[in-house]
Image (cartoon, rainbow, N blue to C red; front, side, top):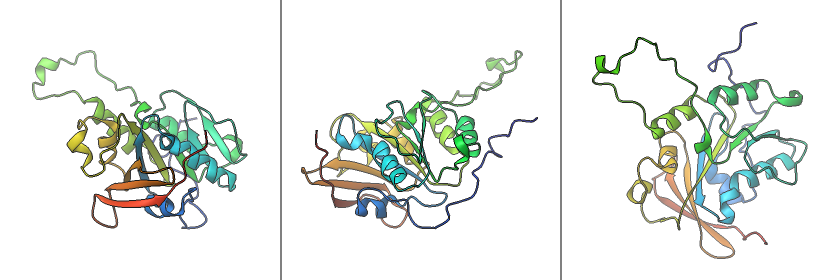
Length: 233
């Protein structure tokens, strides 16, 4: 039996409703806009409460009986029945596509969340034994950022996909990402493949401000203050 290719490993039936996937924060649900065929990216400060936003949203959604597939390296203690966990350290696009196409227990996911998406790895490439790089002087091997970008592009699913990553130090909301991060940073790579891309920074114990780095429905750089009580430790 022939193994399905990554292109064929698209998703089963779409969401029964065009409504957005809910988050614990109504204002954030609106700007994140997790709907059919959308890839959304979220960036938070490393070590902050917001850095676990992927898992927080996955748990919130699964608790509402929306089948959710979470790729994580830190499984949550609580695991609602609608939550499927995948703890593979470095998933490949084909692995993700096939995991969605052939779900555990036959429960097709309606949301896929990948925490620290920079863990993705490209499929091994075939290089002929006879290949001589001297014969191709214009060839430049792909950078890590190039390979990460291609990994995301090779995820062929129709259901909403949420990718998260972090930055060290406090996010600089007034400035575009590529003005204070190296262009090879995974957060910058998100802007090449996701709509929207949202940068989060906590402003008070009760509020978080979001910068829409990539805003599909308005100007990029738009900032949205949101009610977002901090987690109790």
